[in-house]
Length: 367
Image 1: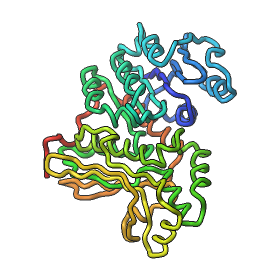
Image 2: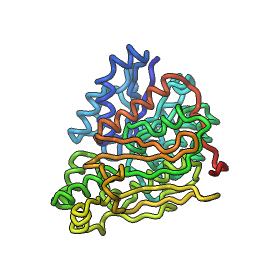
Image 3: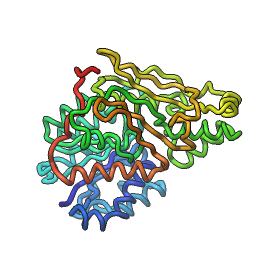
Image 4: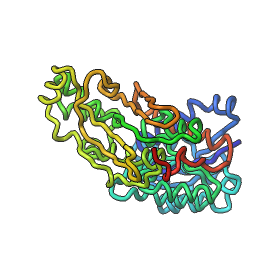
């Protein structure tokens, strides 16, 4: 099967994803029976184009153009589009891939913490056009999960977002595929790599700004670093997790939030000297008919699983009725893991056209 991909956003993650597709092309064909065609790319600065040749866009040429500061319209065999929404409409019009469930919009635009847009608009337009959606953007899941999932179900298309939390480590896939009839009571974790890296660096006597710059250079920190430092990224991930795992119906603005900007290096060092560590902890707890969510720095004892996370490591503890408490630990964090999440979701689409499964618990279930 050949899948047509429309890539919205061509930053660090999007470009790593395109390279990963090339690196795994043989295995995709041999193990999954899949080939991919880059049908179009939309960027903020380098233009929006769709392929006019049967082979699609040349990935290497698209990468070279954007990384060389050139416009995508300079590529051969392309037609310009006004913006991402126009690209979706143009690419889906009279396209057999859309009608046959082989068109996938891969959404990697920057998080908008105010409303989750335009990413939500992209997802809605893609589903309306008959495309599946794969995204690493937290916004659609954090702000409009119920609405978008319902739209995907009506369209018979997938809405997948494994890269939204903990990069490519399977959290949502784990719940969707392996936790039927399980009720999630709550969760707690460290799910922002940048802040954990900064706190670890401060504990080791290094500076806040230096550590942040290192994460920005690695392409891991958000384009707007305040999203990490002020806890907004963690709040968006908390809302996404609560929405999918617990049926919460929240937005990031419903999450009680305190970032690490007010954490002094002296406090971090003093905690370490006493055998404790300060971490930016997210949590969600079901209390009767409500779900309480929080993101804030906490001083944790050394025996706490979360206290042992170093550098960019993340972990999530999930509390359930049938499985008890279990944890997922991410030891490595890089662009490759996030790009892989997109690839894994593309493979999920390729394995079957069925719509996304319902969440593992219903909102009306209580402990």
